[in-house]
Image (cartoon, rainbow, N blue to C red):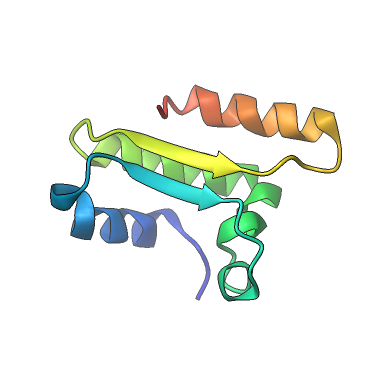
Length: 91
């Protein structure tokens, strides 16, 4: 199994009625998460990050979406990822 926007949306829709916001944890380095391309593994896949966040924003009826990231080895890479995330309109 690999992280993808469709599965992220289905998971978010399961809990959306019971929470105030949906948070995507892109900082978790635990192998359980990274093995499936989730958690901190997402930090190296900016287009997938964009796809997941845009899909959630478009389909959750205005429910706030947030995400947590880690600093990347290069400041420039962190800044570029932060810009991509900001462009999606997440809270």
